[in-house]
Length: 295
Image (cartoon, rainbow, N blue to C red; front, side, top):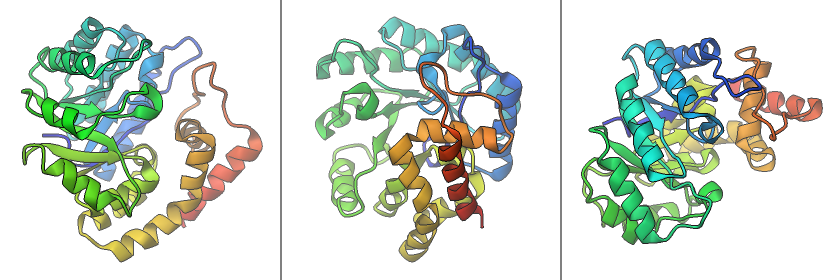
């Protein structure tokens, strides 16, 4: 099952018309495979999935499967407004070579819990791939409580959750509370880079990482320290990341990683409009934070 360890989420380089630059995407993905990340998370929020057409998402998955060549498990986000669209995206991903699926309850009309349950049940049954629940209330405005996660964990193929990481103080109790309700093999992982390592220390089995998609080596060091239960090393390494975590929260991680990818010469792609790229002063701040990590 691919939902363990460090899952690195790269950006999806695209031109101003929303066409994926597959050559640049392949460069990003080969770096991740060579670094030894545990999985690649394609077309997540960092990967601009909601800004891409179905055909461009398919091109991205096909390019990713070719670039990774089976070396690294590939998790593909398949969120869509309609259930039938998400089912079609799931089938596309399976056919193109994905190893797992990530599904968020994106919507325009706010969804009820029963609507979310029915949506996930239908999409999980559309393929034979394992599916991870993408709990991202900051963008979907829907939050999964433990009771709903317990109910969903009983559906065949739903094998994991990507939860927003709580504070370090809250993480142990909140992790244990959910763990007590779901099957032992159900993988509880976390996102929110500035809190995720502490959530792994508290028992989480996966870190779904934004910065891991661009700086895999230092991110892997932090993850391995957390997996080993080395709280002192986690604190030390998190300290080096701290300036970047501050900018993630201030400017949004989405804007920041697009800037880093360009400044490192890995892509020439700005975020899709209406999102604007960072200005010169903010880019300088971002790269100073990156230099602190790489020092």
